[in-house]
Image (cartoon, rainbow, N blue to C red):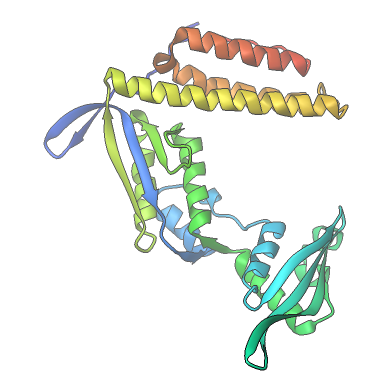
Length: 302
């Protein structure tokens, strides 16, 4: 069997009348304050040649919280309890009152709002699942929920960009706080599509800088990738340890899920072998093999 894999690095490209050989590209972006609907965002993805699957409704919990966050002017909204069936929030009005020549804050309970999660998941009807002892507040929350369910903000778009580049372009984070990434040269077409998407959103920008295939560049990206994989190994180790402490059946579906994740990660490791070296690959394989054995599986590395 031929196990050779085409390199995703060291790819030639042309800018103007100049030819270059690049390891890849450093990309960074700034999605400025935007608000678009789900349909608008889906249409922009399609126009840029990107899968429309990345535009989807936000889940009910996120939409509910976002709806209430938009109602916090002159009031405080706090979750007071939650279990597997109900979420309860208190709305408390906050106002400045005058006492003689002085001013102070006055707080007054406005309402208790409750979401029955069981009713929602059974009916998919937020209106039926929400109760409140103030009808006006209830109606505002329902209206805001319907809007937020299909509204994409700057943060939503940034997460979408990261998901696209993660799944389609094997990106590596070059900065702890994110938004500065390395894209292997072979994925320039994906990068160009994402740039078209971002620059079509108001005054948002996305830029790239070619990274030449030299020792310093290979070391920079290789070290960043190794750090990323080490962090994933530590995360999986903690998840398995927590499951073991809680007495969870780690050799059942839990083990299947972890094995699938590890196989996915090792696929990326194989692509980056030329940047991190055989010794690091062997170390990574050994670490994952140990984790797989703990969930009653066997790792076959080709």
